Image (tube, rainbow, N blue to C red; front, top):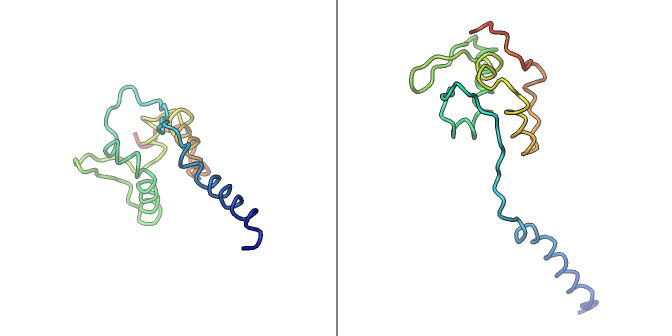
Length: 126
């Protein structure tokens, strides 16, 4: 085998570098401290569902409001909400920096919601 004295150590170094993240991932869990609403305990959907799927809900709301004119969301419990990021979501989560941005910054996501929506509810749909 030609240049075995270079290839074998090179392969070992390569494997060590590739596998290093798996061995040194640490025991630190994803833990983001969010400022939760103080007086509201119920969201439009269950908390666990909202943690994993709020982006799909907001995309559905956007499409349904803009294209179909449907402005009322009825959750599984039959409670009605206005399909509004600013006036429904931000009514409870009124501090974008301490709620939305905490998670989005931790996972490196830059949603484009705020390109159009402002961060202070107007109260138009309240």
